[in-house]
Amino acid sequence: MSHKKSEMLKAFRILIILYALGTSSILGAKAQEHKTAGAEPAIEKFNASKLIMEHIADSYEWHIAKFGETHVSIPLPVILYSPQSGFHFFISNKFHHGTESYSGFRIAGEESKYKGKVVELASDGTEKRPYDFSITKNVMSLFFSILFLLLIFSSIAKRYKEGFDRAPKGLQSWLEPIVIFVRDDVVKASIGEEKYRKYLPYLLTVFFFILINNLMGLIPVLPGGANLTGNIAVTMVLALFTFVIILFSGSKDYYMHIVNAPGIPWWLKVPIPLMPIVEIMGVFTKPFVLMLRLFANITAGHIIALGFYSLIFIFGERSLFAGYGVSIITILFTIFMGLLELLVAFIQAYVFTLLSALYISMALEQHGEHAADGH
Amino acid sequence: MGLVMPDFGLLFWMVLSFSLLMWLLGKFAWKPILTALSAREDSIEKALKSAELAKNEMVKLQAGNEKLLKEAMMERERIVKEARELKDSIVREAKNVAVIEANKVMEEAKSAIARERSEAVNEMKSVISSFSIEIAEKILKEHLSDNKKQKELVANYLENIKLN
Image (cartoon, rainbow over all chains, first blue to last red; front, side, top):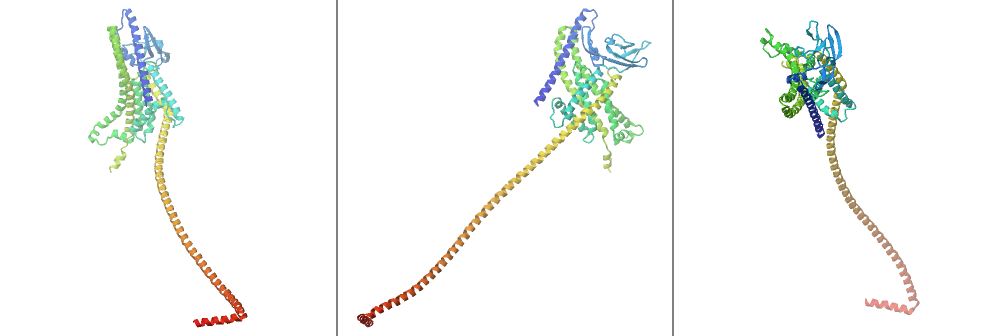
């Protein structure tokens, strides 16, 4: 028991150190920027919302730090398909951090509606969005997380293959309770003893995928730092998987219930199909809510953490000392927020998995036996 | 607005890689992990059940042992009692037999003694009678050889008769 406790403490400590590192690197970068900015006449005012939005949004390069005017970032591959000019494949450093265009493509500027995305310049000067399959920061982060998941679980699975009677060890003893928790208290509890096995692999994958990406989002440096589970496309795909599973595993009763809900007065169904409309809307709102909840929670967490950091620079613009003074408080707040987000990372993974399991169990429900009992 | 508009590229990669992840994990991770977990749970349950069974068996065995011990003790007591009774009866019998035997021996001895005695007496009687004849013969011879003595004898007899 105490061993596990110390492991947890170690994990917390690492997280805090990583936070401190991230904070100091941002501080250092910004302080440098101030020095150089002071020399130049055109002072770029610190814009908190721009910083936050850039951080939350996807990017064609993995930005690590900015020292003075030099960006330290990893360029990522850009893959485009344009109906006019076909396939394009190049590395994002051709854009020089968005300042230059390359073979008719450029990253759209502030005023464009495709802000921050690669656009193709048409001959009449309008911007057109090509099909963009680029390995962006989020896609890269997605690959990292999948790689980690595969490494972690294949190494654990190897130990399980050696024999079930071996006591759990290391990473395995850390993850086994979580796997058992998901199996027993989430999936088995919602879907029931007979049918849970079929859905367990999907729900376990979803749980650990969300969890690892939430946690990686909390780490400010590579390979973390991307806002993957706070990206609507990612949560949309996850919700779509649940939606498809619900549709395919829906029982006859489930669909009958949508069309002709029992126990509802007929006049709510017949001239104007009010109840069926509500029910059909309910079918779509469930995955929609799943998508939005995860997206909003994780994005909000990132916004709050970054907001606290921005406070340092907002105060620092007024006076350098105020900036340093505030930094102590904001770092404490950010650590607190980080711990809170650590909790949220688990809770959101849990909630997404639990609700998916509940929706699946609703779709599996059969009322046939009860109706027969009525006679 | 860009925040809530899903990116086509990310959607594409997410569908592709999440499907792949699900398939890979399902095949290479969840299957062995979940099989091993349920196998372990089954074996633990079985072990617990058999332990419970063994405990019950043990209790039963202990009760049986106690019963057996009690029975053995009772048996021992019974055997000892029986042996004591047997011993007593044997001793009593032996005594009886000894008394009877002794009496018999005594009777036999008595009768033997009596027989011997009567024989001896008879023999003695015959010997004495022959002796007395011999003596009488000798006395007569002696007395008849001497007249004087004969006269004395006759006189003696006469005297005795007179006395009577």
